[in-house]
Length: 226
Image (tube, rainbow, N blue to C red; front, side):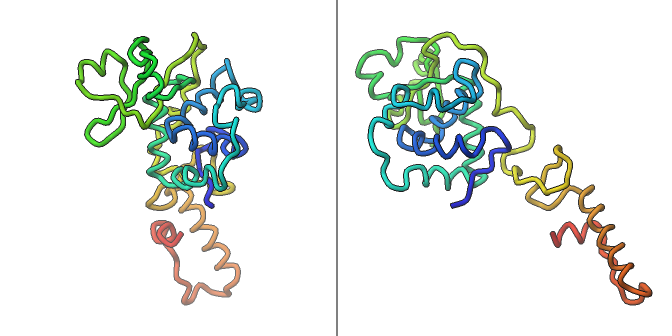
């Protein structure tokens, strides 16, 4: 099973614990709210203290075999990572959620003006406040959770803004490269390609008495080979 590459946003140990919970509780938006907790001082990085049955109802029941695998596979794709970052942006740091069906049943869905209610708009799920929902004339999506802060929280670190690099280009870093180096889908950054091409050329020259028939690779062609 491929591991999601989330650029150091959260450790793999957190994902191993959170993904089965998020998948059973809802999906990617629910995982985004859990990552918000990880980056919010009210909860924090000691996730063992708040990833508990008191906070997440599904933990009161045995997890089915393979729980979290579907969500893990989705997040290992550029599309899934983009969906996560968009969910983080739309939630804007809120940390709590309830079933939309439950809130409708209890009459609390539209009660609080900062509730973020799921709505299907143009075949895409978005989150609206009660005021926005009333103006839109759309219906809540009962298949997704509604998100909010149960109490006033300090600001959540905006992990969804940690890089200006599009989600589609997020890939593992090449060993030895600069921490700021980004590997795009079209190849290595030109600076890395130049360096690697030069190293290859120097090594070839050392192993040959003359350049003779040695073919020199340009930085561009080397980048394409990589």
